[in-house]
Image (cartoon, rainbow, N blue to C red; front, side, top):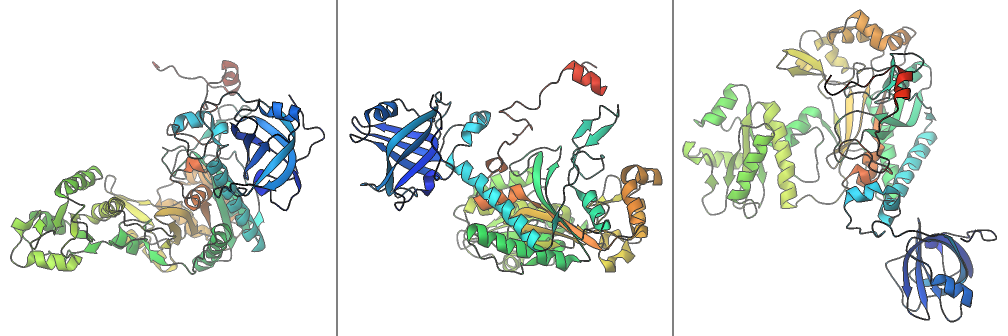
Length: 590
């Protein structure tokens, strides 16, 4: 095997230009084409591909060595740059090639389990098992480079705006944050456990109390919850906190970041300030607190229109304090056949609705699933209220709002995808003023929707004790194309209000002290007004790269069952290790 001695890379493969007379490059062999008397080798590194040429002018020993090269061998070459006769417009270096004068084979590769090509058809499970090979593919390399550039831009922006990067602990005390903790047993403190942080929430609040008025960190976070396309058990958060601010100050700072990020990375101009919707507006119009606003098909409340109808489904919903609402799919009658609508009926039943009423207007007279229950003129009023015309399909749900709104929100997205009416683009929207509490019908109690340090709107503090349904929080989420990118809030800095909040959540003094004692004590020494947010770096990269899964922007991701196929983590550990920790694994029978 050759060595690099005496050779030093002068540039990357994708950076070779015709202005360079001689270059030295290194990389992996993408492809070998032996034409008999002339050999072409495509050499690949993270920057791209360059074509190497070995012909009758090549020294015999070098040519013979080139004949032994196979796919994925690691090469280093020196040679002269010249223009290509047949230009390849698909690659940056398609107008040039390197006439190789010196070739080193630094490492020979076995035949890989799949071909290393950009548009691989190999199933994902096999590619994840050999992730280090999968990562040689240009699309994944481009994704990870873009993720790096996003992180770099974030650091530069927040540094320039006076933020200080501070690392917070990875092994912390287990505290309630919404999802299950990953716990770490302590060998020294036998029987006790650390937790991996779901977020640096309490530590960044402590940093505000410590006087670091602008904190930033690219923080690793861990949540033991079920996986999906946009969720991993470990993820990275662009985490920040600011003192002496209110909601508008934080939003303005974050909009500045979004504006710079998209211009710098994608050369896209994002107009700020970004639009805002309150939680109530978002739910009523789109049926979701993370609405995709790239298309219309908004929800319409037709309760007032149908209040006198004899149709039992509508009447019953209104009598039980619910509503009747619908969406209108414009020009959808051709695609949404009766068979397709039946599928939608089953879909909404599967997500909690009792059923789905519809009007499909193909011919002069619309087909209505509830038409026989309508008195003269009632259907026309419903169609007018929904803006339904010939060629449209109206879909209607009647139930309590907590069923009606999210059902229509999910249906709106499903139908839009089916009709392929969602345009390309970048639609940001802030969702503000989230409910502070949600009512749990099973327990008959009001439960907190956010972590217990969230500040209510100033004018709503008066309702905390007598009308929890009215209380709104100083919370804000930034949504991009229907995906939640960040979540944040203003924090409580009044010890008395914080104590009252704990009590309202049913926590005893002992529980408060056990879970949050150190933070409660810190507040006794005065805390400035503060708030912050956590931006999902993985989700941001996924969207900006145009990917459908976080796995495409994470170097070594977990799969659906939270395992890593390449290293086969998680794995068993020895009895000796368990013994040191004072842990015994229970037998299944036990």
